[in-house]
Every structure is written in structure tokens, then in C-alpha cells.
Length: 446
Image (cartoon, rainbow, N blue to C red; front, side, top):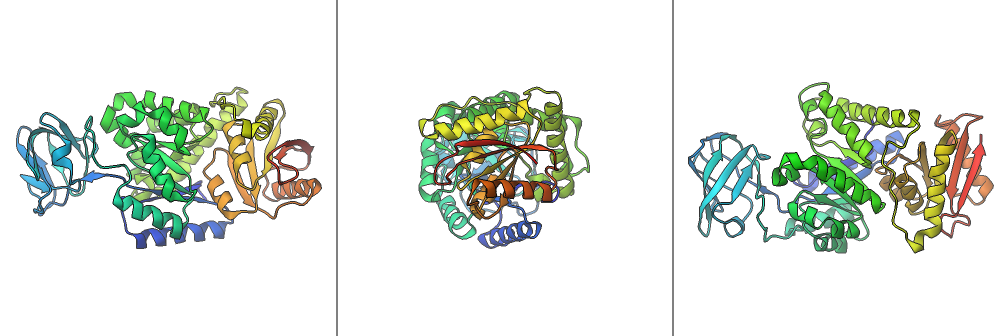
């Protein structure tokens, strides 16, 4: 957290409810110790397909050899292995490809039975326990929200009180609606990692509260060459709807093993920032890598350097979306747009917003002002959720009773935390009276 982490992801593809409960407790405790809101995202595993375990350790798949994927409970060996996806024999056809271990190994289906899928090894190599399987082009019969996901979702929402949910292997808007029906208002982020999701992109984004560019499985499914353009399209489409977008997978993959990244990885992070992504996610780098803190620090440094350079260059190099008109948000939308525009006309040290539900801070973030957004709220859950928003520094304070008190709280916080100093200029964006939506923009010099 001190290195720059704003959100902790709990990956329900691994671990147990007990381990996730303990991790969530550690996250909340550390955030309280540092006196800063940090979000928690519960990442549901979806119909993730994995091979089972091999009795005598990793095996070597030999190109041209037969290899059987089975639902029978057998000890894995060089000839066959059981797997986790029961409908596999009926979901694949002769001639289909099955990719293993993030696409590093490839099989081709030559025959199916009630329990077995007999394959020919097309790309061989070492295969170890619990590696993932992908079926590019196949129509899966299992829904994105599995029975395990339903149990995990209720646990994440009701007991852990996560701030976001991520739904894996989304294929259409109905997948998202099913999760939202159980989420009790917790925002659902659609993970876009299937070709069907790209085909139904607009419909999915219209329903979900946000999206994740899940580049790992997406690359395996559609081919790595297509991922960069798809990433840019997703970010652009999510920005246009004023929603949250996360870019994920292999951002700093080399730092799993090394203390510094490659130049290509630094450029990858920079380009995602310039594309307009709201957040960048680390996975194996911090879950299992040798340099977790250094990875967070490096990503934070690259992000800050890119955004600082954009501001210094006096250009809108970071994507600034044109949000769709929403009548019910007319005042809030106009006030947020005005606050962001002021940051391009004046040397503002910060934009302060007072918010009850986080909406005003979210709107400000979507207009990408050239300065930080200090979001003040009295609701801890709202503060935690805002930690994942672009450019937002959430803080917990008692709600002001007058405009003068709002100004006093703003100035005291900015000076105390060294966000601004006497003589600096700021803008305040808020609703007044507090019972109405955002309708006020005030300029002030400390």
C-alpha cells in the first residue's frame, strides 16, 4: 500500500474462504493502520478449465502422440489426465484445438466419448499440475456464473463486503445481469477474455459497472496479435460510457523473477495510461513473484511519470472521453466537466469534491482533470470504492454543515497532507444543499 497499491484482488480461482477471509482482514487492517481507503475486488473464477495432477510430477507431451483428457478419476501420466471441466466431451468437436498452459501447449481433438476427449499433440513440451485449458472458438455450455461462483459471490459480498466483483469469462450481458442479481449493489466488473465478449461488447458494457481487459485468456482465445487493438477499443468504449476500465495480465511479468522490468513492459504500461485506462492490475508479480513491493513501486512510478509528462507538455495526451448525455445527471455532469476544464485553464493543485455516493468523484475522474481529485466522504464503503478510480484520493471526514465549513475542511486537509500550500489555487465541486446532486463549482486560493 505504501508503494502505491489502491486495490487488493482476491482471486477465487485459488485458495479457500478461510484464506480469503484472512487476506481481506489483513488488507483492511493495513489500510486502517495507514489511514487510507483501499478497495477489495473479489475475482470470481468462472468456468475455468484446468488439467488435474500428475502422479509423478510434470510430463513431456510429444508432438504427434495421443493424449487423453478425461472426466474419469485417474492418476495423470504421459497418456492421460483428468480435468475440471465436466462438459468437455460434448462441448468440443473433432478437429477443434485445445490449448494448455496459456497456449504454450496445443492439442487437436481426434475423437470423443462420453468421458474422454482423445487428442493428438500438436505443440508439445512440459506440462505440470493444474495448468489451464482454453477452447478457442468453442461454444461453452456452462454459464459464466457457475455454482461455485454463486457461493463465492455471496461470501464475498455478505461476509467480506468487497467493494467490487469481477466476473470471469463473460460472453453476453445476461451473464452480468445474473451476477448483479446476487451482488446487492456491489459493482460488477465484466472480464473480457472470450471472443463472444468482443462480439457483444456494446451490450455488455451497457449493463456492467466496468470492464477488465483480461489479456491472458483473451490472447490465448483470439491470438496475441489482436490483443493490442482490442485493448484500445475496449478502453475507448468503456470511457465513452463513463465507467471503470482495468487493464490486466503480464504488465510486469519479468519482475516475477527480476528486480526491474523490460523496456517493453514499461512502454506497455505507459501506452495503457495514454489510452485512458482507469487502473492497471498486477497478478503473479505480487501474488507469487520475488519482488512484489518493487513491482508495485515500479508500476506506480511509470504511471506517475507518464501523467506528469502529459501535464507538463500542456496537452491532453491522456484520453478524455465524451460521455453520453444523461438527463438525470445533467447538473452533476456539467459541474464535473467544468471542474475538469478549469484544471486545464488554471494551475490548480487539487479539485476537492464532497460526495455521499461517490458519483461526483467518479464523473470528475472520467473527465481526466490535470490535477488530483480529493474526494471527501463520510461513508467508509464509498471511500474504499473510490480508491480504484482514476486520479482520486479518497478521504474520510465528517460531512460539512455549511459551505464555509466545506471550505475549511478542504483547506485543512490539503495543507495537512501537503497536497497544497498557502497561495495555491484549488477548485471545490460539490452539491449544495447536500440533499441535491452536484451543482456547485467554487475556485479558492489558500
